[in-house]
Length: 109
Image 1: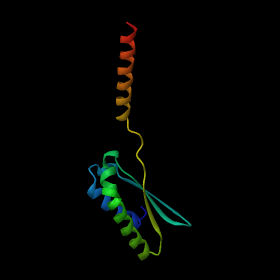
Image 2: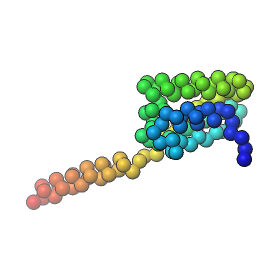
Image 3: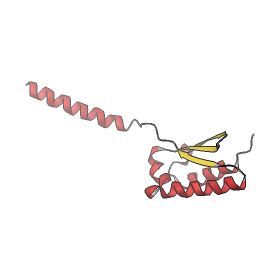
């Protein structure tokens, strides 16, 4: 089994210790000529926690990862992936459509 890089280990430790759904945390690591990119995916309910008020927590995490990168002579960037649209938002839209359809039907009578 390959050893997980230090930057990825630190990010995983920080994120899993602050979110409500640690099992939903996944980190994708990409290396290219620009450096290292860590793409973080979390449960949609945990997005606010990870970003923090006015992005303060995300900025602090980026700072920590840059320090780790400097130690390992690599430029480390951190990005939070936007969550996919949850199925929870769709029922609200469908219920609004049902209400609109009922109003139209009532108007026909």
